[in-house]
Amino acid sequence: MNLGACGQDHLPSCDALGHMCVLGRGRETNALQGARYFYDACNKGYAPACDSMGEAVEKGWSGPASAAKALPFYDRGCGLGSEHACQHARELRASGVEVVEPAAR
Image (cartoon, rainbow, N blue to C red; front, top):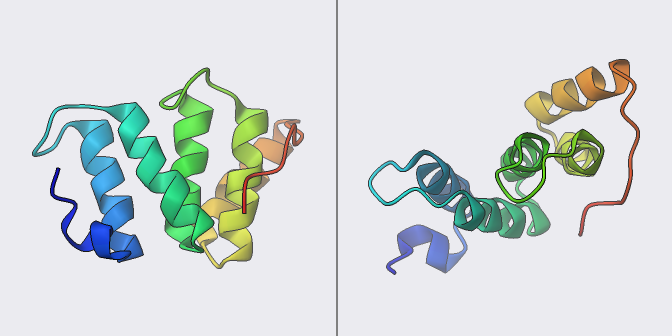
């Protein structure tokens, strides 16, 4: 598979490729592969990908849905400067969700 700019560690492209996989835009739908792109870009410090990974975990795109396991990804994205991730983390905490395990770094 040609990863284009994502294959050259252009992290916004990896996040975009993840969304294309999840939504099936321009390729076959593969939510698990999309989550892998989010995870890798998040671990390399790209805040929006952390928000995307949190959403993937929360909605069950990458396995069983878990708000508690999504929270560390939102927290990481928030710490890296994503206001969307901060908002998602606040919403989960307001609903009583607590962290189960930390996101990989």
